[in-house]
Structures are given as C-alpha cells and as structure tokens.
Image 1: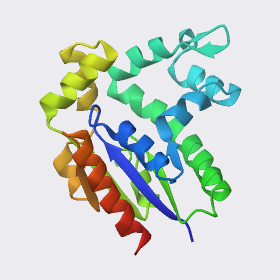
Image 2 (image 1 turned 60 degrees about the vertical axis):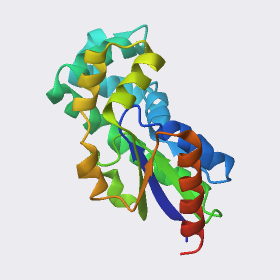
Image 3 (image 1 turned 180 degrees about the horizontal axis):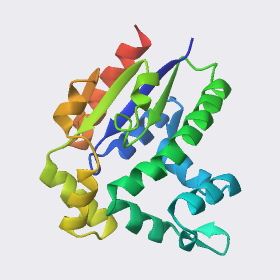
Length: 194
C-alpha cells in the first residue's frame, strides 16, 4: 500500500526546494499548484470560472491568470469560489496520479494550502516546512520582485504555522539548506521504516 505524504509550508518557507530534494531521493512528488495551473487551461474549468467569476477573466479562450490573481487575492469570498472549482479537480487528478505511482512505497503531495483546502485529511503523514516570517517575506520579495505588502497579503490567506504544526507529523525548519536536507533525510529514513 502506497503511503501518501503531504508536504506543505507557508509561502517562502522553501517547500518547493525540499520537494525537488525528495524527488532527487526517488520519491514521486505531485506539485499541486503546478497541476492546478495546468487544469486552469481545460475548457471545463475555463467555463466554470467564467460563469462564477466573470467572462472578463477569459482572454482569447484562456484564463488571464494575472487578472484572476488580482481578483481573488483582494476578495476572500471570490478566492473561496475559485477554490471550490479547482480543488475537486485537483483531488481527482491527484487520485489518478497516485494510482499510476502505486508501485512506489511513498509518494508526496506538495501543496501550499494542504491544510486550508482540507486535502491533508487524505494524507497518511504530513511534513511541514517552516522558516521565520521575515526570512519568508525576504525570499518571496527576492524571488517574485514582490512588495512586502503583497507578500503579507498572500500570507494572510494561509494558516499560521502554529496551527499547522499541531496537525503535522514532521517539521523541517528551513533556515539553512544543508540542515533542512539532513532533516529531510531523517524523515525519509523514518517513513521507509515504519
């Protein structure tokens, strides 16, 4: 039976870097945000989003992701509508992906909003990647060229770490990359021997 391990962390925590590290160690990793963005290009989703959030979001038969992001990040109720459309599609896609990787003892689902979406309930174990808030803000500002205010607004849509820690099985504090990888190695060893 394949174990499903959730990998999550707030924006700027470094969870994507660790997801790639787990892949290098031979564990298949499903990147939920990447797959959700691909699903945004399907006609079924385009039609649902257009109906729910307005036709002006669709340009040349594709979703204008910048317009969509601007709309939902400033309106929590519209973000909930978008999530109610996307999350069931990602859930189905992930279930099919797990079936295709059924010969692996462990697979991972990397998702920024694993807890917020409720999909943590489908995981056997949860790994939370944390880092101090100021470091996370700096990382996102450097990575995205974002303002401090815009990063803080994005963080406001995610649960605080203390709430996530209570529901997590493993914590990786990602301040120093080598130390974080050593912790990841310890977790892999533990998961493979449970």
